Length: 115
Image (cartoon, rainbow, N blue to C red; front, top):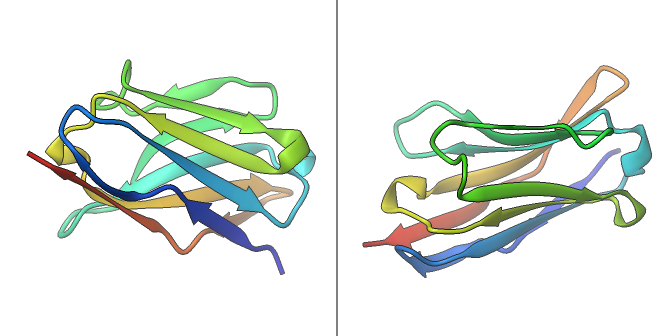
């Protein structure tokens, strides 16, 4: 069974930074896409950023220029560096990976940005 373990969430003041990490139990070399989603209270889960095996990236408009997604295949890990955080970024952040037409989710990590 594939397991994803997220870390790096927490409480930060507006303007601050956090780096999320997601380690997978499956080799990242077989994962076509590694991504981060988030879900704020009362809102639908939304894509934050995604990265393909080839390194192509995609970002939500709301985080472009502030967040950077990267992956380290040798460590089976995907990262999300979040700079210039805003209170609107407060949410539970979920790691998602896609490989061989199967998608897997992590349990989520809370990010809270205070004003």
